[in-house]
Image 1 (spheres, each protein chain N blue to C red):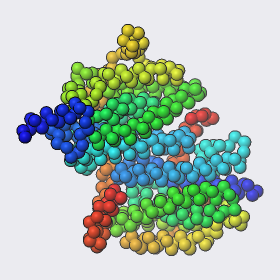
Image 2: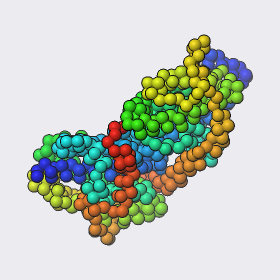
Image 3: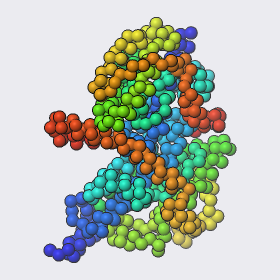
Image 4: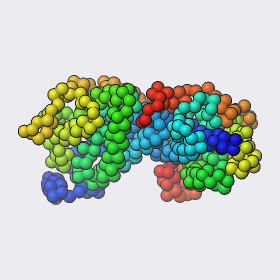
Length: 324
Length: 251
Ligand SMILES: [Fe+2]
Ligand SMILES: [Fe+2]
């Protein structure tokens, strides 16, 4: 059987809506694209812990502190599922971390913006998790099985995060004048970066066509962005907050909201590493990893020694995975 | 008077969980691995769950406008009754683990006794929390073993942390006036008795972890009387920031 016919068969399976599993034959480019996308997604979960983590120690009440801790912990769990999904494609978690730490791998640019007030925690849950859900609901039907299944688990938690964030915003917008001002300011700062989360315009997104063919993506960046705007504008109205876009208005003919132009210069600046917090976010990840090196080494040395004395490889593996 | 002592005792119990829980919450997103990050956050979440139970009960006793949040956030430093060891900084993962272990041994022994407290609510909180704390102790003990006996570097780091933190641990098992009063009312256990079992267990784990029991072990510490180390003021200024900057608001 020639390679070409394998590729044809592969495409036929995808066209028929079949799931591709880790052991199945797949084109090298499909594998590489998935490693890139799943690991980018995993890195986004992990780096995404940092801006919200910035407010854990200053949460305004016990209930909010517990809610935020649990949320950020969920994101760590999402990172775990996604790294595991990426590992099914034949790459290790250490290699993936290395790509993140050396700047070779990307993560979502939204996390390069600073969190400056408690209201930012509400805005991130509402807008950022909200935008993530739109992307991820689509990905629950993606062609690669382990990725799609990870997404199903993750989506449930993301919608909880979105509701929690919206509830924080609702409380603030019905609160004191200072609280309302805080909420509006957070919306002002996070609105445009949230729209940027869907990536470049379709005509400037080279991966989209192939991704649609492989059902990695089932909708284009612009379609998803429109969906987000249409869902979010009425929510802002309920909050009594103003979306910072003078061009935003309902278009009866299209049945969608029209909205203003994204500042694409800023978008590319942040992607290239020149956003407000790129250095700090990556720096914090590298520091955690470097500071933890002796801990991980000790855990491996300890279980190696134990398994030598017990002569039992299985117990070593069990021990290392329990430890690290 | 009885209810004032009980109120103070609830603060003491809650403050122990809260100050340690806060220190652990600082680590969220910065752990040495994803799994340990998640585990430490879990412990922090358990501790804050306990804090809420204790302070909701305390708020009921206090009456008036008191809530779990006014109690947690709106005291001055001298009114926090946690042991000094708990506010110590996360200098490295060794300090995090040693601090956790020295607290967990005490915490488990305490909750086992508090299950039989004459105060039904404290007994109920203790029963629920004990399940969590048994897991915390398993976690911290396994890391004592692993890092104590892991590599030369990990052993040294653990010894440094132990030498620094263990001399503060005696405060956990030395009764303050409030705890003595509670013991007399059979609400709290006798810490003199608990201390014997505490040191036996602590020494056993230190030994099995290839670590040395520090020679010096009686630093002067008075956290339970509200006289804290200099770390506490900074911890509280961060912890209380929102409640202080925006008084009387709902979040
Ligand atoms: Fe997530
Ligand atoms: Fe989320």
